[in-house]
Amino acid sequence: MRMIGIGLMGFLLAGIALLLSTMNILEQGQRYVRELTTGPQLVFEHRTAATAQDADTAVILRATPDHPVILSGLPAYQSVAFAMPVDARPTSGYLQIDATSQVLDGVEGVLRISIHNTRRGEMLLRSGEAGRSLQIPLSPTDFAGNQLVVSFSLQGTGAQHQCGAEDGVEAVVEIETTSAVYLTLDRPLQTARDRVHAWGNVVHVAWPQWLKQDEQLRRLVLATQFQRRGLATVFETVQAKGGLTTVELRAALEAFPETKDQSRPNRSMAQIGANAGVRRFYRKAVWRERYDLRGNTGQHMPAQLDLHMRFGRLLGNQHWAVAVTLNSRLVFQAHITGAKPEYSALIDLPEDIQSASNVLEMVAATTNPRTGPCDQGPELLAEVLPTSRLVAGDTPFADPLSQVHAALRAVGPINVAVAGPLSAMDADAASRMLDLMIPRNVAFKPAAATAHVTMLAPGLPAPTPSETGVAWLVTHDDVFGQLSVQSVGPGEALPRKGLALLVTPDALVLPEAKG
Image (tube, rainbow, N blue to C red):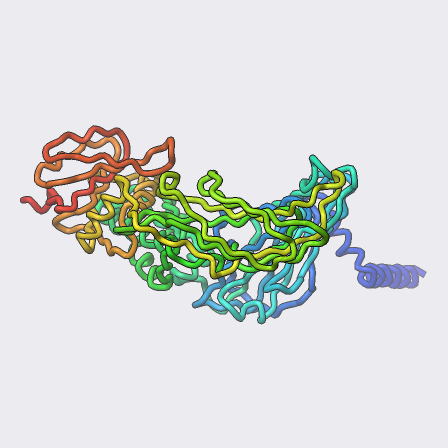
């Protein structure tokens, strides 16, 4: 009898195990416990990838990881990019999106995630505040290119009483900085450019406290050259964070080509970037074009905006209202019949309201009045055509900084020196100042015997440029967030407290070279 009882008990236990396995109850229970502790997690496109024992793995952060990605209102759109490793190739992996949502009551909405314009996952929005995670396994097709482009779309409808003052704020979703691509690789992530890609195209510069001054200078110059290529830099004092050494910085620099300067006037607009292509909107759309007049000798201020637009047809007797502002000053406005598909205008841009950095805004809106707080009107179409351009005038832009640029451009290759050791914080500020100070398309390198630009560390006695002719002391203006330039004569003292750049076009002989 005892043997029969043991047999029946074993049979029952096997049956219960089979039932649990068939109904997936164990996995559901584990997932429920996990969601109670860490929040809900969704997994789309279940795919079991073959992974080797002791496989090499990597976490890839999105480009510009410190910039927030927020979708506000219904609808809303955003996109991010992940730079894939080049030397070590992915064999499998998944995309994890961590999102925090704030949703009003009565809203029915969804967050859609697409990879290379193909929908790959959706997340239903809940009322109130919620944190969700979503995983999307990646296929070999996703790894075919060197970049993974992920698009977000916030779609849905809100309660009717939310029209008017609360219109457009029914839901807010933030894509958290913890969102990343998790990869299994065919080899370790070792090369410098792969590590930069994994950091989200952010260059981590090793900056330990024991670093010698000449080595500080080399890494500072290299960090500035990375900034010229559109990559952000971070100076790491902790060795464990894996900052790049001088040799690694040089190796990685070769993998990132120099970016073309798109800030010069007399150029086409809306060919690429956020202003390119047709806009779909309700009531009003705004195109913003920024141009910078610094960094080029003889840079002429734009005298006119040659504007070309194409509009969708409006119903009834509606009209289009077009307005152009420069640095928040109105420079043009017009009403256009809704039956006219294209519009052109040559708009004067006053010189007296232009500065070193400028923002041009083009606004298109419908004149159709609202019939009520919930009347947003039909969907509208408009486009700033690529033939639109800024037309340079005859007046060159001039300010103290442009005079320094002109003097340095005449020098040719610029020698850069540093006086005194720099902390990681000072190095970060000095690199940004150096990027603004040296004209575009002008080479610069660490100085050996003479210097045209000398970085002066805070707290050290200011040198006197007695052996040079014209000179400038450049500091950072914390109030206006730009560089401040002060002319310095031969033998004149340099009153200062913080970090500064001493610009000496006639080349200052360094103390080490005098002996």
